[in-house]
Amino acid sequence: MITMVKELSEKQRIAIASKAYNDDILSLPLTYKDATEHTAGDTLADFIVIELIEGGGNPSECARVMRSAIEQLEKVAEAFEDIDD
Image 1 (cartoon, rainbow, N blue to C red):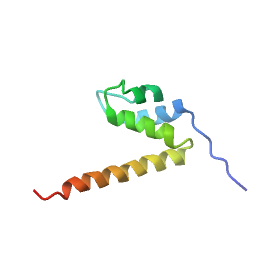
Image 2 (cartoon, rainbow, N blue to C red):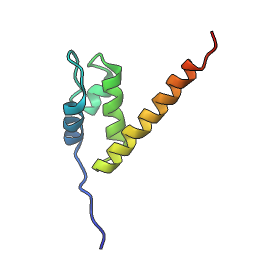
Image 3 (cartoon, rainbow, N blue to C red):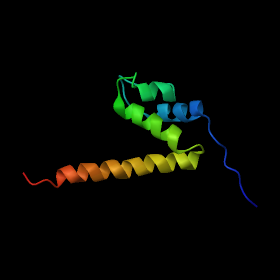
């Protein structure tokens, strides 16, 4: 038997991410359009929303997209740490 995973709406994905996003001053953009127009003033928040909307519809796809972003960001940080002064 195939189990169907529920597709999350854009609004649901942003709401779930907003609950987890820990910034006392800024919050995630409310829509994909706001994120692409960078209206919130927080590029990390914009990035999260854009990746969630472009990369996944169900919870496991959203988690995969965020984990992939974490791996990429860690590699960038390591590249800077590896620079010899």
